[in-house]
Amino acid sequence: MALLATSKVSLAFAGVRALVDIDLQIEEGELLGIIGPNGSGKSTLFNVLSGIYRVDEGTIEFRGRRTDRLGVAQIVGRGIARTFQNKRLFGTMSVLDNVVVAAMKGARGSTLGDVLGLSSSAHARAKAAEIADRCLALTGLADSTHLLARDLPYGAQNRLELARALALEPTLLLLDEPAAGLNPSERAELQELIRRIHGEGVTIALVEHDVRMVTGLCARAIVLDHGEKIADGASSTVVRDPRVQAAYFGELEGGEEAHAV
Image 1 (cartoon, rainbow, N blue to C red):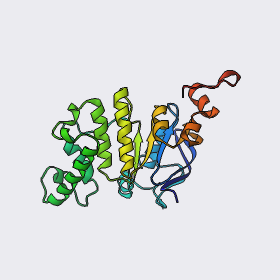
Image 2: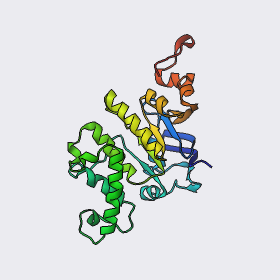
Image 3: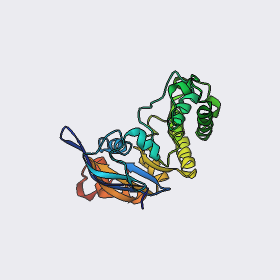
Image 4: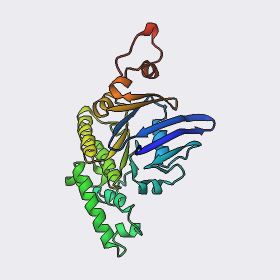
């Protein structure tokens, strides 16, 4: 049984189809790439899987249990976490507290008062701090815990977004264009970080415009175009599929193949 499986998932906004009959399986321990041109439905798919949007049709199962009618917090509780293209950091809070807040989301009875030291839940705070320290070490931010999130360089803010998601201790991590805005050196560092996270036993689905990053990291990739899944298979093969080439570059004359994907 797949860790996560969708069946005929569809979603429309004001009559415009954003996802159309999406069948998807993510196996436990996999590092799956999800690619496609702008507007193809990649982030919308993540929004559906993480409970931000509810599907119009179809089902989503995680570990064999339906999740398509659950809220975001319930889905996080099941073991799915995600990052966002637009980072959702608390800029005026420290790096450490940004991750502690995320770690405490799963603690029963925790409140903002726990985070600020206004309640008696010292145990919950201590446990969250342990989780945060581990996540910050993994993402290379152990020496930046005292800094305000807004004062971090852009690449480090990306890693903080990752650390916050990891603090939720997910079984499945959804990474939504984590390399956006990074320079080549930062992209290489991120690629190694994703490998380390995957090596820790976290299943990962990666949405990314950098196709070379996807082929370098992911054994399998799926391709979306106009809300439909048009290819699914070995990443090195998928990117040479004529339908994928056409989706990225338009129909090519005389059977010409575009090698830039």
